[in-house]
Amino acid sequence: HPLFGGSMASPVMQTLCRALDGEGIATLRFNFRGVGGSGGSFDQGRGEQEDLKEAINTLKKWPGVKGNRIGIAGVSFGAVVALDVLAKARGVGALAAVAPTVSAVQRSKLDRFKGAKLLVVGEMDRLVPPEELRSVVTLLSSSVEYSVFPGADHTWSGHEDQVAAQVAGFLAGALR
Image 1: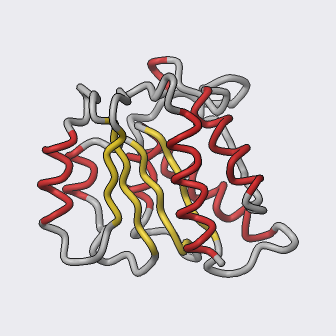
Image 2: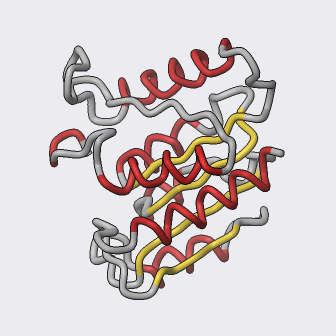
Image 3: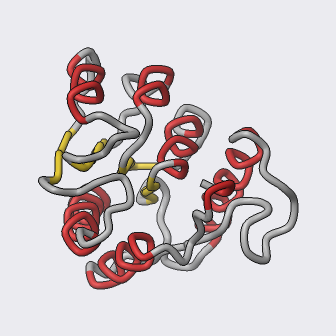
């Protein structure tokens, strides 16, 4: 989250990108507006949706990136933005949302998204209670892979390798 020090340099994001690279998946990691050297300022998630759409459009122009073989992975606020963008983004074939808020999943268009979907939360996450998230996931009519990591909290400290391995494996399978 831009207001709480979140950036593309967080340990979980760095570990995730290394795991994706190990699966042969190109990654584009970026800071939302107003974070690090990025211009602009925090926009309550609205402008950040534009940031993500631009990142997706940039990936589509990369040599070797094909059509719907683009996956979105986001953690916490990044997962919320990904869920909000999902219905508007073209060419996205998979979503991995790590610790998204329950309200973001409720308002999302996950049922309309035809690609592969993964939602991950830590067992000790006080911001995203796993049972509340599970109850929302069970109401969805489309298939969603749901995973709870024992011992992990919202920061994923000490569990970066485990969550990165699951997300990378999921995206590798979904995008090949």
